[in-house]
Length: 343
Length: 94
Image (tube, rainbow over all chains, first blue to last red; front, side):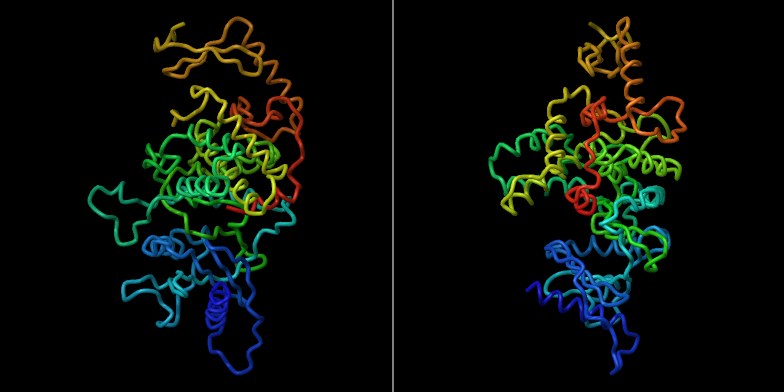
């Protein structure tokens, strides 16, 4: 079945890459860039086709695609390509022009962008990432909640899915290692988080309604046009209004755990502040704003490490153990020394 | 002990070997005689051991890490995981 999806994506990317498919086609063979249950990505030359997870909320995805295609975020988010052929379009007349369907999964098309080289983390564009996040957080996209006059139009974007993803990671760990003692520090750190960070309540406060990416990591950046264009954020599947600290929280969690060197963390944080990013105060200690989200991302990372290592029939490796150890320290904190109540 | 500001109960914690009192209400912190000097000493140790300080424009150095941060943020040694393959994978995955 996966192969069928890959073939369909390759064909769709191929037909989109051609203005007029001719007999003398010199296109490269479609190449699989990723093949997971939550995202299968196939490239054919300048076009990339992505099959989203089965069961994706297509109305929510349509709204998020509208965001990426709109002029307000040009230069921040990579814009999707419209689905040219009517028979590939998902749904009926009111469906998104950017949404196709294949084998029961929503499919989107994108221009190819050059990703960050995973073999060379020293070259990672931390400053560019920070500036893109600051611009995203400052776009002032209004949500339903902030327009008391009624719904904010057909394309109201649902909440950022960061807390939902953290909850999913914990559920996945529980299923992979039921009742195992190794999961205890992760579960204890999880229980110490406020309900909104566990996706059990809406996020509180005025800061909680800025536009966020929702799943920021170094795989979420590409240069477009490839290979030397400016950096852009990709993957809007989890984007929406929420606490922007969530987008800073993964690097913050790596730094707090001792994995990300201080100089890299401060390059990222300083660039975000210099670009007017609203997630943390302009100067001084950023941790009152970062604390809850960084703890949640620490739990999420440790939970996924335990789930993945269980699936591979191995113990967590040294780096994964660093994140589990951070959970143990979080779990040992007296509640008064966490910044849960601030901001 | 009661908080001098909001009169809620204060609780004692040990942070980096220094006793501090924190208010359970407003979360303000009370330092005894000599504790500020102890904190300044710990802070000086940290800045000495830290790699070349970033060009921070702040008048007061930002707190290095949260209370649950790794031991190296509190004077330990950095373990150099940055170039390990496993961390490389973590940098690129959800």
